[in-house]
Amino acid sequence: LNANALVSPAMGFAFDQVPVETQIAMISSASEYGQPLTQGLIDADEALATHIRQIRNAGGDDIVAEAKKQIDAFKASKA
Image 1 (cartoon, rainbow, N blue to C red):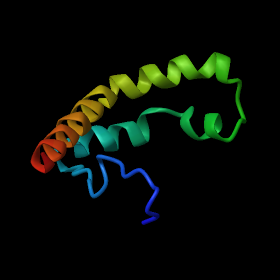
Image 2: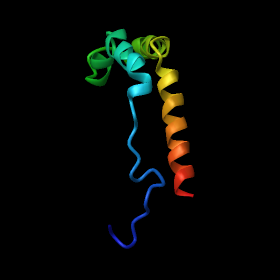
Image 3: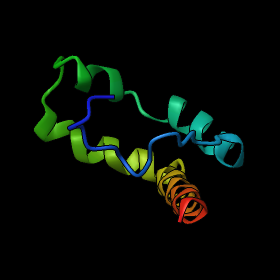
């Protein structure tokens, strides 16, 4: 590392997907808008809200909560 570089408190963290495998699989197939949005093929103003709703309905909030839980545990183990 560069001597002047800031080191992220998450350095070395690896997300364990096992607790949310089902939600990840559901999100992968839940929205037809993901790829077209990222490629600029459809109007984001019209499709983004629907895409976000589909992700949340498929368990997106569960994945975020699990990631926060794991990161908090990781940081606590470093303290």
